[in-house]
Image (tube, rainbow, N blue to C red; front, side):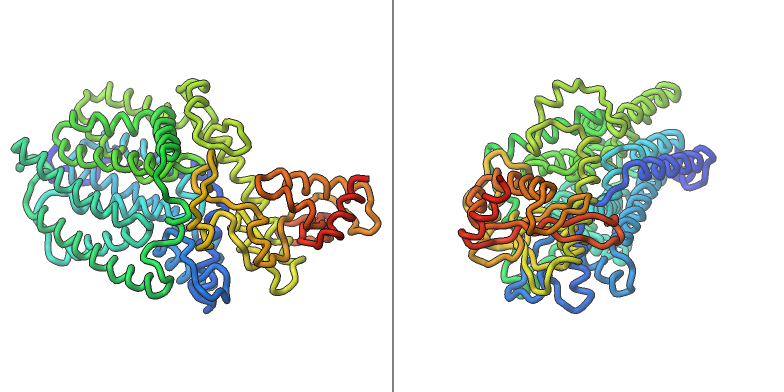
Length: 561
């Protein structure tokens, strides 16, 4: 198929796009969610927009960069100034980004690589139906926008033919946005530059300068301008970061980073689970050298997929559902798939493409072609000591995020002005309560993030978690909270319902490593809640507060009677 023919609309092309968009919308409706960590970015954005500064805890003496996605926070802050609900804004921005990625993929396959309409339709549909791509269109984080920037930049860098100075600067601007939207964005800038040069080398070795989309003209200069603009702009940002936060790298890196044998093993199990569950992305990337006319672009895209796998393995994977760190590799794998399918006759092409799509969809219905015992052997999460499939983890995450949001709204009714609280999940609780939080995971706390001690067997991102008692010298007013979906009278008297609820809260807290001593330093109070969004009438909030040893001893003795 000639490049000129590829420019013209084709019925199969439009049908394929329409089918991909419908499938994507239906799957997104099934899997959409908001994850608790997203509310950290939302709180930073809201505080920034309201004039409190780019901080998590307004009024703190030394601001802490507890987010990993500056550009995402900036975009949300701009929308917050327009009085747009940030929970909705985050989901809409991400959905538009994924739609953009689908369109960039379709255009790249059709116009830049000159693939046939049927192949373009199959590859675009494959991306639209790939669970990590679909699931991380929601979540409330920057993943979908990062994916768009990553793939769009790649497509502009690798495509054939000369371009203007303005086009090169535009590609550099995309690279700068890529560097600013994730804390490790500069690595992806370097990775894309390397991938583009790899494509150039493959074209040169094959002597295919005249093949569709595979000319070498201008690529080296394009890469040089791209890297210069992106890394130069990033240098200015790092200087600002050092001035504002007093550190050249985000605090989240200190809280989460650290190479160890355990981290690498956990990351390798994560990546292996992704490859087994979805099959075609890893396989298509590995077979990219077998592609035909689009071989150079496919090899470069396959290299990006490999880079994503190496990054995921190096950082120890992620506890969130559906492989967040590997979702941005999805359009690159789809490009490889399209380049490979083009080599097959029309009928086998359709069979292979649809089979790949169907196999990858299974995890959205809690199914998999990979045997469950094999997936359990590769288990990379440690929550509650039991194995969860990706769909089960998604459902658990939905439920926990809703619970944290309810706790935050309840605290907004109960907490007194100026009170502080220790928290592990600080996202929705902090966003809805607006309390000053002491972060047990260290994302917004320098002291915790820089601890040398590490919790063995922790889930990714929770390696430096500290107990609640670690913050006692800071005088927190609240140590832990729990919702009871019933009226529980505040003591005294110590009724059986209050005793049972307080006992359960105490057992949960005191059983955690390092918090056993709180049994001699805390008491529980009960607070009736008013009906509100996310809170039904008749609920009660239990609050675990610090207390002197005599009061604590008397309280828990009476609870045990």
